[in-house]
Length: 74
Image (tube, rainbow, N blue to C red):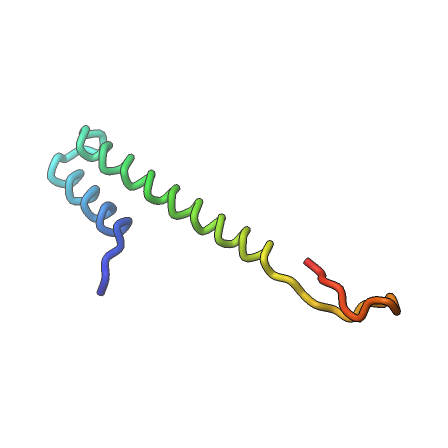
């Protein structure tokens, strides 16, 4: 099973918090912030991909105008 960077950081954060006995230990906070940055980055990439895929989809339809056989619908 392949571990993603997000899963790795999540496990590392939990382990470090357990070892330090505190969720507010500087090392735990540093890992948590790093995890947050990766999550936001992945969300941005996913949003960009969804937005771009919707923009790039064209549907060719029969035109109702006699002079045009087909038109493009976005």
